[in-house]
Image (cartoon, rainbow, N blue to C red; front, side, top):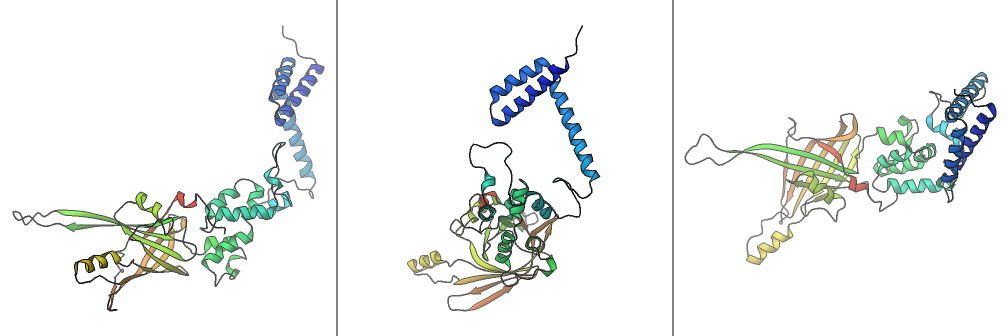
Length: 362
């Protein structure tokens, strides 16, 4: 017949079990295992009893706190209270707390100013704000540092240096201004896929059933935070091109560099094609007439909008013209009619390799 353990053995088992928990937190796993085994021999249900006691004590503490209306616990949640102010009230001047005893210096020992400077390298000159939002999800302290107004003010000044002080529509919040105000995304490429059908040459035997070909090519736009932009026209799929647009030096030979300007929801682009020096040298070598254009300029006006609830992911071309300037300074302008939406929109695609390294601080 089974006998119930005495009260003294239950108390000894609880003491040994709690001692084993302390050993485990300090990293002494061998001593912790010995204490757990001795406690389970005295009382096999000791772990469940300790868990029930802690649950009862926590519920009693919660009841006592609710009876005192002026006292608020650290984890009390108020829907009306701003999350930033709540975390600031809980943590005070500290960033975070170590979960257990540390033998080396913990991250919480760093001052907030140094953590914010590290986050400026995380965002980098390329404005990788997505990575900053991921850092904000680590803990309360990182959330506070990632919401620092100076970080978001620097990000806003990259796109709107002239109107950067206009914070009235955004309640004085730099982050809200950056999220809600139209801008371009710099950690990736905007891709436009163009498809059309071209008639082939008719056969001399059958003039009624000529071949047809489906032509597919892409336009790529890569924006930088300093106002520069690269455009590439290629038949190659995105996985072969986007990696080459990480920097101007890695770009393909047929890249068209230029600059852009934001004005409300509209984006004004001016791009110049590369001079055809190779063709000129070839023509001069064989004494042929040089009929190549000296300069070709692309002027585009794009409208920024949402794409499947994602802000700033879509660019719709509303005006497009090409200016040709010959070697005798003769100018020819070709303007395209876009009234029937014949120009497909550019859709943003994030490129992970763009944010692998930070070369310049924000």
